[in-house]
Length: 159
Image (cartoon, rainbow, N blue to C red; front, side, top):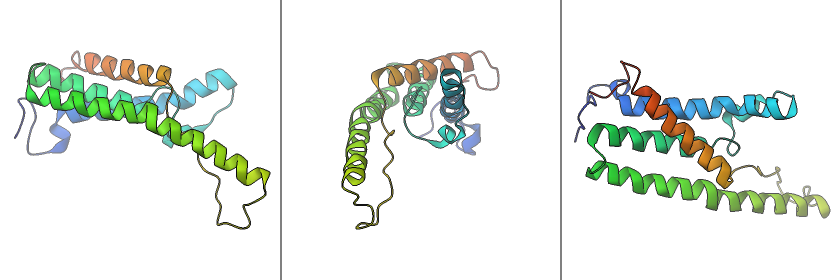
């Protein structure tokens, strides 16, 4: 099923997809800048990391959902599907993955305290995998802003 304004010939002709990808790239791209502004050091690995401000997951699904609303209509079944999908992603980004980060911190501390890294094939667990409410809201705001700005760019505007 093709939505109005989306081409079925080429994924890169799909303006909804392009705007969602732009939102994800912008969210990931500004993480090192924000870190530099706060700590006066570059941390380029943030370009590919999970967690941090803003949430790229939230930015992506918000841009996607907004663009579907602008294109297919806010009363369409497709918009309803996107809203449910976005709710699951945002909940996961802030709730489940935040808890995984807490578990990683605890496990890393236990391995350090009891010097267990030699007994197990231990590689330090990544601790920053989830998002705070502020990071999620920042991602949602960025996603909505990206979608709204895309309406002003002729080649991204839905038909």
